[in-house]
Image 1 (cartoon, rainbow, N blue to C red):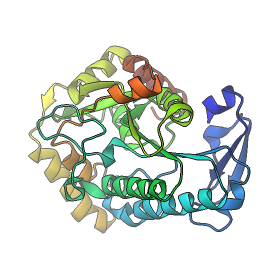
Image 2 (tube, rainbow, N blue to C red):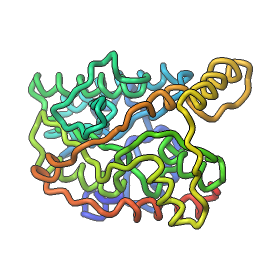
Image 3 (cartoon, rainbow, N blue to C red):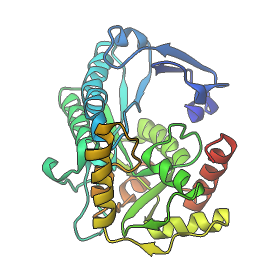
Length: 308
């Protein structure tokens, strides 16, 4: 939204309540819900809809909310966009919907893990939401799909599970790590990719938006260089965090004890989630800024906003 405003767009944003991260932006706020009536009226006259709404949670307690927002909400939004005759919808999916290659190599847009192999409700919800977008395309809608990898940078207010990794590092709550890998990308490059998808994307196509494949250890070492805090050197066998997360989510949480590591989050770490951005560079003309800069900006934002 910030980038749209900078480029002179007139922006309407659907929000469920207070939206402090939008304070100061020239944005018309529309209070509502993806499944509430009147969504098509809110889209009336729009040149495009950027569907970025989702519930990003790896906790099993949030399964119903994740499915409602990500799957049912996407279907409702696409139907509303069709009713409002919106010329183009840019649907924010995720590489979670694509899955991973078991040999650790980079997956591209042609790869698709079976639904049964996608770990956790969140990943499956993004697969099902993308399937709804493809169905809308097959029925005549102009829909372009963007698949971000792991966005990092400022304004992650919740924070997301990804941002939580940075916050845990900054607050000294990450004494060890597991052998996994992620593709990181500056959240501002993700925003630019959405506009490029609107302008140049091919309807019905998906575009992976990611910058750099890194192991978790490499990410923590970069955070150490940025902050001066030591990176953890203890590598845990996966069974240790898996048992810890299982105890927390299945035993302690039902008893009312607050836990801090979701079981599905640890399960996901068994494979390296690496991706190729070649198609997005080739067809959308994207360029990507340094991941280290995005990490540094995320650190500063969390520090400035009281997370540390």
